[in-house]
Structure formats: structure tokens, C-alpha cells
Amino acid sequence: MREWDYNDFTIAAYRLTGVDLTAYNERQMKRRIDSFLMRNQCRNYYEYYMMISSDPEQLRRFTDFLTINVTEFFRNPLQWETLGTEVLPELLERPGPMKIWSSACSTGEEPYSVALLMNESLHSCAFPFRVMPVLATDIDDQAIAKAKQGDYLPDSLKNLPEGYCDKYFDFQNGRFHIKDRLSSFVRFQKLNLLKDLYPRECHLILCRNVMIYFTQEAKDRMYRQFYNALLPGGVLFLGSTEQILNPERYGLTLLRPFFYRKETGEGACPAEQLENSHRQIHKDSTGGI
Image 1 (cartoon, rainbow, N blue to C red):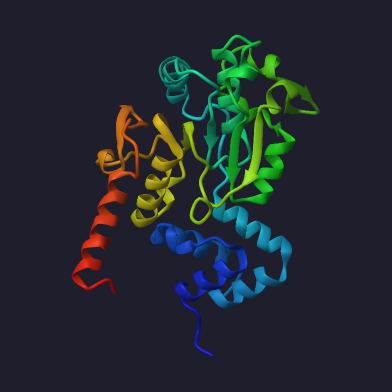
Image 2 (image 1 turned 180 degrees about the horizontal axis):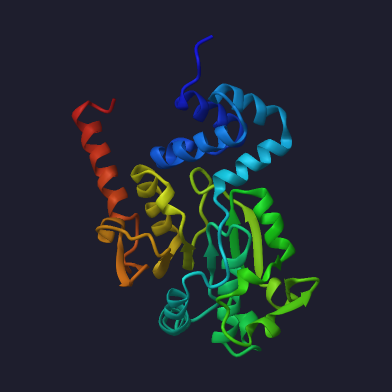
């Protein structure tokens, strides 16, 4: 039997976990996995695959390692200030309840942050009627389970504005626990951004500090799907290390740094329309083959 290379491992890992490693930046991901092999004293990819496929705890650690669950409340506070003082007020001018999607929610700090911000932006009695429960999704079952528990160490709350800890958290045994008044407005579910259907008619989508790990091809697909998931005039909120070059290609315009608005036209995004046009031209030129 020949020795496995990285490509062999990605195929086997996809069958085992459902995570498509080929959609991630290969240089970054390969370096991270190689370091994990060394940490677990595995001599090659096949040996490491046999270990994670036969040991549920090692498989869990590998999945956690892949999904990069590093987050905190109000991560990059200046961007959250922009969201609260400039972006949300504009979105709240629209009639009807607001639909918000935290698309890679990790252990819950992000969706709870936006729910907290919405509660502060609206009069408390109006909050349940103006906002649908924040949809919070992630590929990692363990992260979602932690998010539902709503228990956090003090370091996760270091960026919270003054007074928010007492208002939205209970402190016990050295940990902060989300109060029911906030946790009831976040709904968690599993979703793989690379292969599952996206929700529709969103006013605001958060996808922060995730896109940097994907290939450009995967990013292209995801930006098109985010476009289709947004209502006209809806906003996509990205992380501090991410920006979209030529956002018009995806039917988006730069609203503020890291905030992109869906143009108000209807239909598929421009990149998708262009691809469909190319497919039709090819079909016509080949007699429908």
C-alpha cells in the first residue's frame, strides 16, 4: 500500500466528518493538520486517520481543531459600535420584524452579542415584536452544545460595554451565564456553509473571521449564496481581516468598512447571472450537449 498524501487524507476526512478540506486554503490547513499529526505523534496521514476514525474523543478534538472556535463577545469593538450606531438604525427603519443570521456562530458569543445589541437598540417591550429570534448556525456540534449552555469565562466578556454584565448575565462559580431574557431570542442549529441550503430573506448576516480560511473558489460560491440569502438592502457583516474585492461582482456595495449592502435589484447575483449566460452560450454552441 502506498503512503497517503494530503489529498488522500482530505478525501477520507470528508467521508468521516463531512468537512470538505479542499474548500479551505490548502497551505494554511495543511500546516495546521501537519502540526496536529506531530502533536499526536503520528508518522503519516494514514496513521492519523486510523486514530481519529477509531477513537471518538480524538475525532472530536480533530473536528474542534478544524472549525477554529475562537471568539468572544463584541469581538473587534469598533465594528460592533458601527453596527449598533449606524447599520442597525438604518435596518430598523424598515417595517416588519428583522431577520438576523449569525452564520458561523461558534460557541455563541456572536449571536448573543447581536441579540444584546438589538435589545439595547429597541425599547424593551418592542424587542420581541421587531426581531425574529437570531438564527445562529455552525458546523460543529460541540460548539453549538456549548452555545446553548450559555456559560462563559470572564475573559470572553472583556469587551462588553459597562453595565451589560449585570443586565444580561448571572455570575456563579467563576462563570457568567446568559439570562433567559436574552437566550430565548437566539435559536441554534447545525449548518455547513459549504453544502447546506442558506436561509432566505435576511436583513443582516454575520460571517466574521471565517472567510479567510477558504479558497477563493469557495468564497465565490458563499458570497453568491449570501447575496441570495439577503433581502434587497440587507447587510453582510464580515470580520476585521476580511474584505471583498470588487463587491459589485456579487451584487454588493460597500456600506461601511466590513459591511456590505445587497443592491436593491431582484434576481440572481451578477456573478451567477454571468455564469448562467456562459452556460447558455456553451449549450447553444454545442447543440444542447
